[in-house]
Length: 148
Length: 109
Image 1 (cartoon, chains in turn red, brown):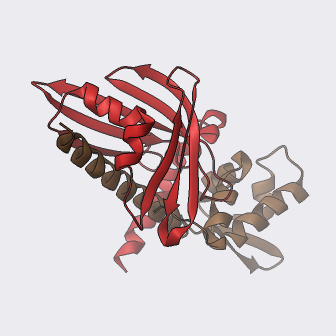
Image 2 (cartoon, one colour):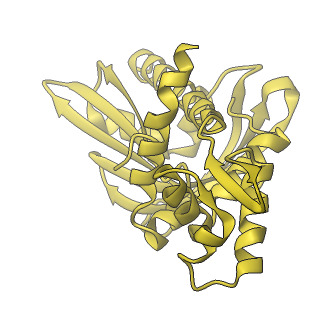
């Protein structure tokens, strides 16, 4: 997958994977931790935790603007894998992208990796296989100018 | 939070959203081309290609200049910085989210 198209972030949590999975998928738990006042604070979540089940999260964004983000669950392997689509309200002409959480537990400690893909549009990649390569090479050709 | 409201970045995303336009950019990567030359690579009609080029120009991805009677198009990859910035915003967003998740789970015993 192309660098341009995908973002990953990782964290190690001193707790079993099941607790992390529950924090991600249980609406009551999720609104307790997702975001902070004044930044991106979740206030409401709906979650139909099954393949193709819908989820929705509402909250207050920067400057008090309400936001909604929603999608469907694509893959659920409790407590190791959670994949869902992501469609935000705050971006005009937003396209559906894919968020994947991988939880790897060892000795009661869980390595969490989130992968957000399709950011320069998932559908396009399907239509045109050369797309990520094009973007990568365009970016490469652009980089020397950043030294200016 | 991730915001992307500027008309400029919308124009870039819109410009990149079409396979023909991406193919045009791919072609221009190999070097500047006259409009007729570009159109010759596609089955699409010349007016349609001109329309795609107009969109690419308005997004700043293509720069055109006259050479005699021919209009020569050149790739300008600089606006793709916007795409990079947008991705970096999301990077920060997920980093913050994972930090909040960690704090919650580790305290919730």
